[in-house]
Length: 150
Image (cartoon, rainbow, N blue to C red):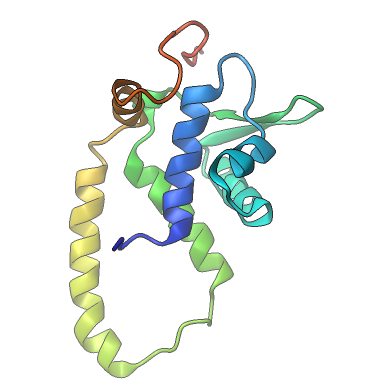
């Protein structure tokens, strides 16, 4: 069981994939959708939310796609999740039933747990995830062209 919505997990997956596979060329949304069997239309709106949040940048053209907007060490899991959850909230306004008991009893507890979770996730960078993925045998081990330079 996961407490994170699918969109939030897709956002983490997409950003980590871009960090692992954007070796001098952008990663297309089509590649991401195919690689992870994700719905392309939903993925594209999520990627655009990540662009608006300054996490990814969009590269137009025939060989376009997405690249990291900043260095891996400057992106945290919390930031990626906030962008994804914000995009999720935009599309679901009014879709959830509101109940007084839920607001009065459950919501304060969930807000506390969420705050603690985000506090911990602020310490986990994309660089940390990238290193773990490489240690798990996922992605390229060569660092040539994989660093973001300013």
